[in-house]
Length: 211
Image (cartoon, rainbow, N blue to C red; front, side):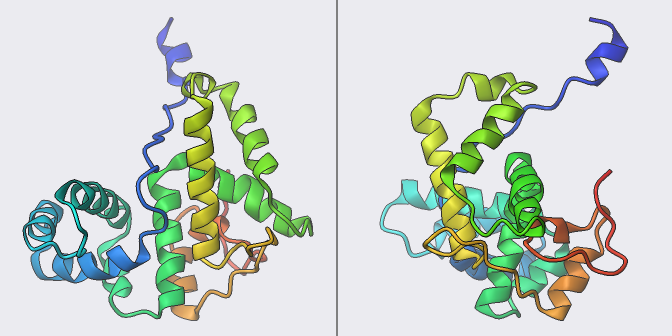
């Protein structure tokens, strides 16, 4: 394969979001440690040594701390500071954005399926929509072709639980318009492309979308 051909090979999706769901509670506990130490490795060590997440087993703590740190580190320092200041609803929205940034598959699903269906006035989002999305991406991503059915079900389950915890999907599967606060809209909209694209909302003035 020549360099030109190699350059268009898509990067493999990270599919390690089977631990935890939105992790908003965990984020609220770890974000203050980062505000103090400004070092994620130190946050990880302190969280495990002091059992900050108050989990029953050390192995569970390792998994949850590792995953929460991965999500939080996808935020800017100013956004991590917001995690400690905002309401529970705002924190859930921030952590949804963090998951979308950390995991490209989630981010693309949010933009290409969740928001697109909302803009097209399709009222619901179901498991079949996720499965169809994954099948379409499998044309370019071999790692999705090789995925086990059990793993796919786990990934799908976690994504839908995140959506419900973030208040973006009802228990009945109805898409819920995101009621983003002004400060979150400003923070998320300041990125290029705008991270408002991950939410079921109408395009906002000045919003820069992906090419």
